[in-house]
Image 1 (tube, helix red, strand yellow):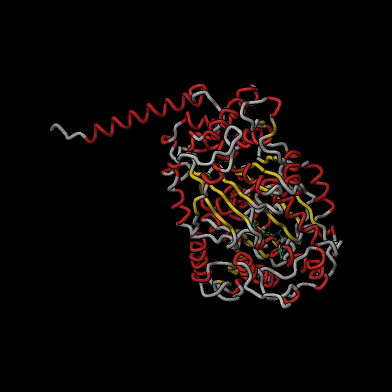
Image 2 (cartoon, rainbow, N blue to C red):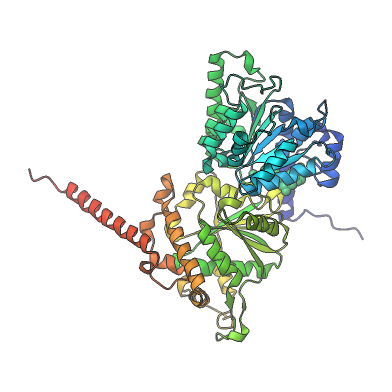
Length: 601
Ligand SMILES: Nc1ncnc2c1ncn2[C@@H]1O[C@H](COP(=O)(O)OP(=O)(O)OP(=O)(O)O)[C@@H](O)[C@H]1O
């Protein structure tokens, strides 16, 4: 009997379409990469063909031109710069040796990304043992790093602060052969306040535009090549591009905004032959293109993006409910949840990993079990370096787990099999939204993202929309109705408000009991509450009009941290500040009113 040949199901067809969009039709060999490297990419790393962005960027990187790349998260930007570097280093004559020092420098914004890029570099040089990758980053032992630098590191991955430290204080650090400087997540490096460090680094390396010897290194014969990459670009990248790139090739910019996927300002002109006027013109048009590049963001096509509208007091109960439903639906789940502060991560890590609960009709202590049974990891910048490493590696290797994190995990991290991103606290800038959700749906995989919003914050959707990001509403009521109340699943429920829903109310009671039971937990909750309110006030620019502290009911905020107390009992200094602000507002208000009064004259 012949098999029925039909159309593939729509989801599979969409995925296939997504793959076609993601991958180029050529091979790695077609791009000119060394056969040994191509075989390694295919056989050992499982990369059958290059992604489109790799197919565009690799030949440019090999040509020696400066390059600025903007491409969606999870499209393989790391390989787009590391593969050509390894290719060119392995064919260098005389052969690369440790005594030659550093040839390529990769700057990254976070320690975790530093470790990740180092791991990929290690894999890529597997067949070229004479090329040595290494890293230096904050939190590591300086003396050990000095010793490694003295021995020689061919491809050095670094966070900016620590690199500058070594440039200033490690005399044995040889970089006279430096050929490449890569800024991975360029905008984030600047956003995190490393701008001055980066300028000092470029100054040290003689790689700053306008520096007398900027195109050559101290040895006087090596052509420098700088590469900037990110899924999002911002105004600050303009300045970095201006001071570090000469007539760069622009890759991945919106096709409608320029003649082709690739462009440079004046074709392949050799910058050394340009007059000052030409250079000014180049910089101007470079700035124009960058300004367009800032406008909107590309997200993976297969990513499902939703928001859930939740009143403030029930936020934590709703988060727990959604997580429970996710893990019940599929035992093997990997979820990343973003919070606004380190204290908030610590508190929620405790709740998610320790909250116990009895699902029976009465609170039966003997029948209590963990509310969520999966492993929960945490990651933030105030953790000890060893704990940070353990979390990063631990979550990466788990099949089923939750990671609670600040934005430290938002950039570049490539945790395998993450299917779900929850933004419990709003990211603020739309670019941060893009990077957070980019931890899923990588390299054509499926992925979902959920953004928590309070009813008063819904205008944030418009802000995202203005950057080309649109979300649909998550059907939370349906999820809620699937949970039993008092041990039973009622047939039909009346429409009641979320806060009054028996499941939410009972979960809230458990939470408040859990927080109140231990002083340490209570303190975690209070600290988290205070830091959360502070972070809420720190939204910038237009977002200040959406995330307004004065619209918040602080009692409800406290509830969302499992606190029964009113905020007046939480954090005295914070309370004093609030009172002061209220007074000021009152004064300002009466002044404004007074000004509105018609003059008696
Ligand atoms: N040609 C390829 N074929 C298959 N998988 C690939 C290929 N290139 C890279 N990958 C894989 O794709 C994933 C994403 O790559 P990478 O982390 O470099 O993306 P990215 O574009 O830098 O993302 P982000 O913007 O989030 O930093 C990694 O797991 C990587 O191993």
